[in-house]
Image (cartoon, rainbow, N blue to C red; front, side):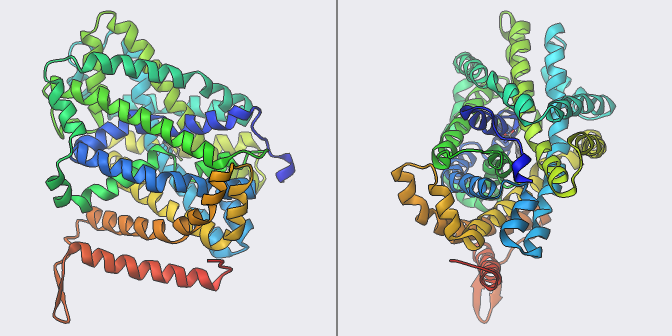
Amino acid sequence: MAMTRESWQTRIGFILAAVGSAVGLGNLWRFPWMTSENGGAAFLLVYLGVVLLVGVPGLLAEFVIGRRSRRNPVGALSDLSESSAWSAFGHVFVVTAVVLLSFYSVVGGWTLRYFAGSFTGAYFGAPGAYFDSINYGVEAVGFHLLFLGVTALIVLRGVRRGIERATKLMMPAIVVLLLALAAWGVTLDGASEGLAFYLSPDIAFLQANFLHILPAAAGQALFTLSLGAGTMLTYASYLGEDRSLAADGTAIAVLNTFVGVLAGVVVFPILFALGVGAGGGGPGALFVSLASAFAALPYGQVVGVVFFGVVVLAALSSSISMLEIPVSFLVDEYGLSRRAAVTSLTGVFAVTGAVCALDQGVFGFVAGTLVDLLLTGGLVGFMLFAGWVLGADAVTELQRGSGSFARSLATPWLYAVGVFIPVFLIFTFVSGLADAAGVAVGPLSLLGVTLGPTRILLVVTAVVAVASFLGLRRSRSVL
Ligand code: PFF
C-alpha cells in the first residue's frame, strides 16, 4: 500500500500544507475568543509556554510516527506496534476528526457569510446584532453545508493538486492584512486598554485561576498547531524524501504562533475601543471587532471582501486537513475509493455540523472543552507511542535529514516526549476534566494530611502516569 500512496509534489509542498493546516480559524477566531474568556494576557502567557515546550516536541512526535509508517493514524499505530490496544486507541482520532470538523464547518460558514456580507455592507450598521442574528439557526446550517461542500471538493481532488495549490497564496496575504489592521487598530480611542488586557499579565489572576486557564491554554496551543488529532502525522506520512523534521516543525510553529498573536493585536484594541471589553467577546470576538473596523474604514467594503476572502481560504486549508484524517483511514484500512470515502464522511459531517449550527450550548461545549480534552489526550498517546513503542527508532527517524544541532537534541527529545511532557499533559487533562465536570476539587483530608486542589490533581496525575508507564513497559518499551 505504501508504494501507491501519493506524496508531496514539491519540497515546499509539505511545509505549505502543514502551515495551511495550522494557520486557520484557530489563530484568527478561536484564539481571541479563548483569550477574552480566560483573562487576556494571563492566558497568552500560558499559551505561549505550552506552544514552545509542548508544541514543537509534539509536532515532531507526530511527524516521526507519520514519516516512519507512511500510514494514517490508525494504521500507523497498529502497524508500528503490532498491538490491538494501540490500534483501538487509534480510532479516537477518527472521533476527534468528526468533532473538529463539526464545529469548524459552522464557523467556516460564518466566514463565508461575512465574505458575502462584505460586498453589500450587510453587517456595517450594527456589527454586534448582526453576529447574533446569523450565528445559530437554519441559515447557519445552510452556510455550514456550503463550507463543508467546498472542503469535500478540494479533498476529492487529491493531496497534490487540491491541497498544495490551495495553500500557496494565502499566508502572505493574511500577514499583510493583519499587520495593516493592527497598525490601524492601535490608533483608536481606548485601544491602549485593549493592548494592556492582552499583553500585560495579571499574575495574581493567573495564580488564582491557573487550574482553569491551563487546560484551555494548552488545548488552544494544540488546536492552533493542529496537534493531537493525527493531522500532522497524516501529512508527514506523505513525505517521500528526507527533510529536516526539526527545522520544518520549528518553522511551522513560529509562523503559526506569529499569526495568532498578531490576530490578538488586531482584535483586542478594536474590541475595547468598541466598549465590548474583557470577557465580552465570546465566539463573536473576531467577527464583531472586524465588522466594526470595516464599517469605520474608508473602502471598508473592499477591505472586508479581501479580508474575509483570505479568512475563508485559511479556514479551508485547515478544514481539508481535518477531512483528510478519516479519508486516509477509510482509504488505507478499508480499501474505499477516495470518492466513496469523501462522500460518505461528508454525509456524516453534514449532520453533526448541523447539530452544532442549531444549538449554541452544543456548539460551545464541542468547540471549547471537548476539543481541548480530545487533543490533549490524543497528543499524550502520540508522545507515549514515540517514546515507548518506537523508542530508538524514533530517534533515528528524527535524525534522518536533520542538521547536527537537531541530531544532538534527538535523545533529550525522546525523554521529553516519552516521560516529562506526557506527565504535564495528563495533569492538564485531569484539571480540564474536573473543570468541565464542575467538580470542586478538594481540600481533602487524608490520614491527617490536608490536600488542596492542585495537590489532589497532582496525585491523580501521578497515579495515571505511573499506570500508563507500567502498562507500556509490558509491551515493547525501549525507555
Ligand atoms: N490548526 C487549525 C486552526 O488553527 O484553525 C485547526 C486544526 C486543523 C486543528 C486540523 C486540528 C487539526 F487536526
